[in-house]
Every structure is written in C-alpha cells, then in structure tokens.
Length: 200
Ligand code: HEC
Ligand code: HEC
Image (spheres, rainbow, N blue to C red):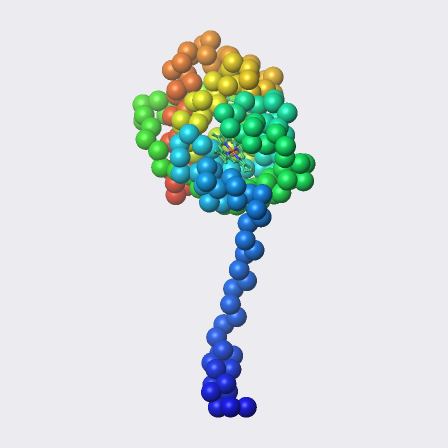
C-alpha cells in the first residue's frame, strides 16, 4: 500500500462516524415549501405552518380541499388531481416535522379575555398546553393571527365545514361577545412565545 493512502486511512479511522443524513424530502412535498416554508414552517402570516400538525388532521384537511369541503384561495386547485397516495406522503412528511411558534405582535389587554373564552368554548376539543387535543383537531396556540382571522371567517360563513359543535361554539362567541370576543381569542392564541410549547 502506498504510504499516502495509509495515512488517509488512519486519519479516517479516528474520526467519529458521520451522522446519518436525512433523506431529501420527497418531490411531492417540495412543491409546498415556497409557500409553507422549508419543512412546513411558514414565515408568512397569511399562510399556516404545517410542521407538527397531527397526521389525521392533515389528511382530513387535504381531502377536504380536494373535494371542495374546505375553502382555499389556492389549496383546492392545487390538490384537485392529487392521488390518495400523494396526500398520504404529504401528511406523513409534515406531521413528522418539528413545529415552531412565531413571535407575533398582539394586544396584551385582550389576552386574558381570550384565555377565558378559550376555556369555555374551545378547550374541550382544541386542548391547551397541558391537554393534547384530539388527533383530528389542530392545536391553536402559536398559529399565525392573520391566517386565523381569515380561516375563522371561512368557518363562520360555512365555506369551511367543521364539526357542527365547532360552528356552534363560534356562533355563541359572536352572539355573547361580538367581534371583540373573536379578536380576544385570536390575540390569546397569538400570544404564545417562540421559546415555549404554547401559551400559559
Ligand atoms: C401558492 C402557495 C401555496 C402552495 C404552493 C401550497 N399551499 Fe397550502 N396553503 C396556502 C394557503 C394560502 C393556505 C390557506 C388556505 C387557502 O387560502 O388556500 C394553505 C393552507 C394549507 C393547509 C391547511 C393548514 C391548516 O392549518 O389547516 C394545508 C394542510 C396545506 N395548505 C397543505 C399544503 C401542501 C401539502 C402543499 C404542497 C402540496 C401546499 N399546501 C402548497 C398556500 C399554498
Ligand atoms: C366540538 C369540537 C370543537 C369545538 C368546541 C371547537 N372546535 Fe375548532 N375545530 C374542531 C375540528 C374537528 C376542527 C378541524 C375541522 C376541519 O376538518 O376543517 C377545527 C378547526 C378549527 C380551526 C382551523 C385551524 C386551521 O389551522 O385551519 C380553527 C381556527 C378553530 N377550529 C378555532 C376554534 C375556536 C376559536 C373555537 C372556540 C370558539 C373552536 N374552534 C371550538 C373542533 C372544535
């Protein structure tokens, strides 16, 4: 064996094994990155993050966009020809990514009212820090506030078809607390700190 090769072998033997690199994301999900951010962490307040959402929820939502049960400015058109297998790859990939909570500007004076309303009307299904939500229901803490406002409107006017009880909960909030009630909820969810798992 030539001496040079000997040296390089000896050196490589002393190095720790290289960490197993993750395989590149499947092509099917790479098309989502320009809008939803790399690995599904969105940097834009109008577009929701997908990282860490429950797989069952993601699959339900993707199917709903495909058949028109959920309103989307872009998602319906984007998924209309997607196969079940492709939707499954998307749900698998994004549910396994680590979620990140963005830092947002919110109104402090609305947060405690929002927390109260959340506990009365929304916590049973959506959970909070100490209570995992049902697998078909998304956690709302740390969601982008602009997206939240729009999507709540879509549930209220009925173009997003949710659980009947969820639509009722929203109607009660509006009847009893008006738009301020909704804004309080939005500000409460938006008050989650980036370094925490959610809001207290
Ligand atoms: C052109 C930008 C764009 C692209 C590309 C895109 N999305 Fe979206 N996505 C949106 C927007 C905007 C919304 C909010 C609903 C709407 O208006 O369509 C959304 C909403 C969603 C939601 C709902 C999230 C929630 O919290 O309920 C899911 C799931 C989703 N997209 C998955 C995907 C997947 C998977 C891909 C890749 C195949 C993808 N999106 C590609 C813009 C995009
Ligand atoms: C009876 C259970 C239930 C209650 C009560 C409920 N929700 Fe929901 N919520 C759901 C389910 C299930 C979904 C998923 C719906 C779907 O598939 O589109 C959902 C979806 C949502 C979404 C969409 C999230 C996203 O990322 O697009 C928002 C926002 C939301 N709920 C807010 C609320 C608020 C605010 C309250 C309280 C006023 C509330 N919900 C009460 C069950 C509930």
